[in-house]
Amino acid sequence: MAAIGVHLGCTSACVAVYKDGRADVVANDAGDRVTPAVVAYTENEEVVGLAAKQSRIRNISNTVMKVKQILGRSSDDPQAQKYITESKCLVIEKNGKLRYEIDTGEETKFVNPEDVARLIFSKMKETAHSVLGSDANDVVITVPFDFGEKQKNALGEAARAAGFNVLRLIHEPSAALLAYGIGQDCPTGKSNILVFKLGGTSLSVSVMEVNSGIYRVLSTNTDDNIGGTHFTETLAQYLASEFQRARFELLCSPLFNKCIEAIRELLEQSGFTADDINKVVLCGGSSRIPRLQQLIKDLFPNVELLNSVPPDEVIPIGAAIEAGILTGKENLLVKESLKIECSAKDILVKGVDESGAKSFTVLFPSGTPLPARRQHTLQAPGSISSVCLELYESEGKNSAKEEDKFAQVVLQDLDKKENGLRDILAVLTMKRDGSLHVTCTDQETGKCEAITIEVAS
Image (tube, rainbow, N blue to C red):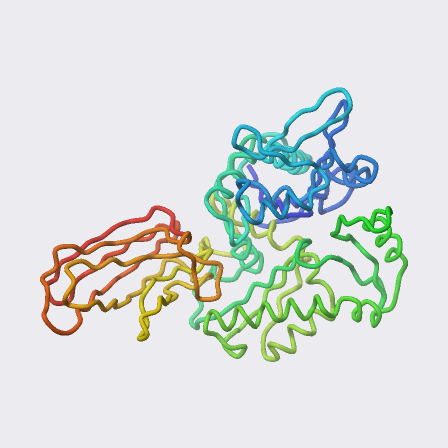
């Protein structure tokens, strides 16, 4: 039996199958290798994919797009709030959960985001079965790097509701590495690899080059209305004609610069320089743009740029390879499974600086390969009998808010000292599954406290 890998993106979905020692993307019933992640509801049916996308103009209020952005989120989540504001399909809170309000004329119904995702997964399963047969249901699902446990669980449940046997959820960067066989063998040297994912929500226009310097638009990603005319339709019509590279690059230059600046910020946060990076893996449809590739090459002049696999197929191919490994299939390209898990957010400890102000120290920057271990010494006045180590998680910027605190360890009944400071050694170990074990030890007396947080990030 073969195995399946599925990538559900914000704008599209793609399925690959692992069979006879290799992974390949499967085309859907329209002959397309990538399926729009769009679901439209009509009076009599639920339409998934290209047909739903093509009918969205006349049925926009009953057409769900970018469901991945809201999956597993609550109404107080900032990303969910932004999505609700921008969505043309009404999203409401009902019985404590977010629902799409669908009105097809005959009745009004309320649809869970998970049910929308289930329909897309069902489409992917149907596509895979067209070449494998109905008995192939083992699947590996990819998840974004910043997905929390609630989002992961919602995605997994949607896939299971579609009839898949979910073998594993893996991060999208991990899948991209698998597609190129990176990390499977045991290389003698150490490599630092940057995975650059630029999908449909990262850049508002996705294009392909059809001739030297000539482009054709694949998709646009905006739902604004301008002067009563639907902007997506107008922009698509304007851009559907072929046009010169210079004009395109001029229009998109600010977006390109933002992409490169994001890479610079990542390097700074991780403590790397461009010279520390050995390879760059490109994935996501917009990363096919030559000008963007050139900017990346300029930033990493001595780096191997890996883009031989179509960028919108890299992630599902990697997922299919992992599925093949997990089901025991012989892999002609790689020898053992790659399990690269990373911390999704910064993990910080709160302290006090010399002026007495609160300060935060990043112990696990987002993107830290797991498992990982860190030590931190917390100094406290000897005159106090208890010390509290507070842990926070943050999206970055080396700071956090009080509501970001997720754990604390308290050392109590410490012997007081008349003078000086006491040193508390904290040892933090984060496992592959994201659980965090923390021990705090008073260096003078040896008194120790420990806790384990099941999912820290």
